[in-house]
Length: 111
Image (cartoon, rainbow, N blue to C red; front, side, top):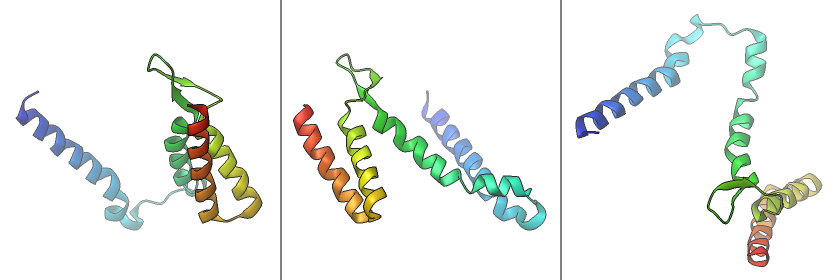
């Protein structure tokens, strides 16, 4: 791939991103979404966050270096502990602290 190809790819990705992200602002009220679509879009941020975090929590490299589902994963166990803490206490900063402390301890113990 030449330098020109790289710059053309970057320019095309820029145009595609700009068009998709700004289309709702540029069109304004010309496009009306149905109620069911508005209702479904309320779950988009939580879905994107779950799709980003879930693979990291569930998957762990096996001895050969491939990613594999592991139930004894320190990240998964720390995440479950942090979630349990949040359900009980409803304290976000405490949840972060408990999750990081659990992960640090479990990583040391399970290594």
